[in-house]
Length: 182
Image (tube, rainbow, N blue to C red):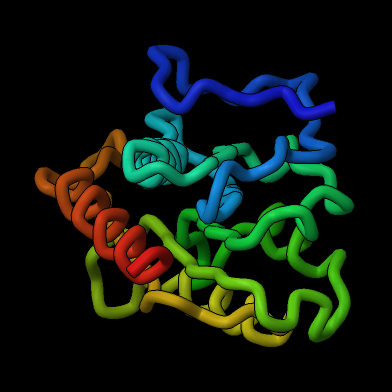
């Protein structure tokens, strides 16, 4: 059973007991999109980016499920037309939960389906890039990458999104919507 999470919420913590098993049918020619993410900071920066992308795509008429990676049942992923996967960058790469999730699938299992990657990271020369690793894994799984990765920057002792990053995220999502439905 799919428990749809609210895209707009004041409580950004993912539900601990929901699982996505099958998305509802798409309407008309619109694609079914799964935005899945891991998030690690107290401020839930990567979740904020994921939900912002989901909000914009939903406003553009797409059917969107925005789910914390641990809420997604692997069997349900094949029911989506497009997957957006994101993670914070930690130790120069994507977090374990998002990569473990992607590792549950076989090579070329999603041949022809669409995907894109995103991450949050500190803006520094040696910070690494989670999105590159996620995109590489998506390609190995057979996904067609529809947009270059979205990289959003965080800063500060409390690790919060830099000013302007959510606006950049909205613009990315608008461009993604155009790429998915020209």
